Image (tube, rainbow, N blue to C red; front, side, top):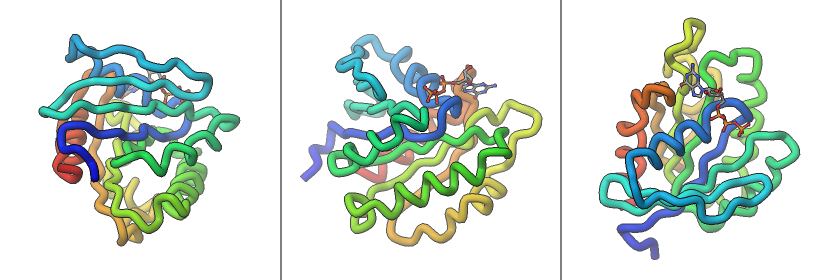
Length: 171
Ligand code: GTP
């Protein structure tokens, strides 16, 4: 059973989507943050927000590391899936990657909440949440609670709202 005040979340998404920038935002607002395990392929970061200690596993989006993601599925209580909302060319790749995650045996029978950040919402050609949800077929996710938030990881806009939702799901 998950301890209420501690959670492990995976931060997933293609390379360049903004994962590290998002994790850094939460670290910055928190003195206790520290890099725990610098490992090739992912970083484990600890920060405290909304009364919960979060162990965030910031997984590299580089193709050669994506098979590392699935080893962490068993131990996670939540997923943050970061999408570059301006990178229309790669939406098909995002959908393929997401489908692999959703169908993974360690996740498909669990009600692990998934928070999507439609990141880089500040860029002119960014897609709205509604369009991202349609492009990725998010309405087909029936077995897990999910939520999509627009975010600008550089200014921090939208980030707290998203994590607030995620923490509420797990509590
Ligand atoms: P990998 O480590 O390669 O998997 O990338 P990542 O997903 O960790 O992306 P990272 O946080 O390194 O961000 C990639 C680039 O996008 C950087 O140059 C960021 O400054 C930029 N970036 C991140 N978030 C935003 C955003 O909301 N808006 C804009 N305009 N740029 C952003």
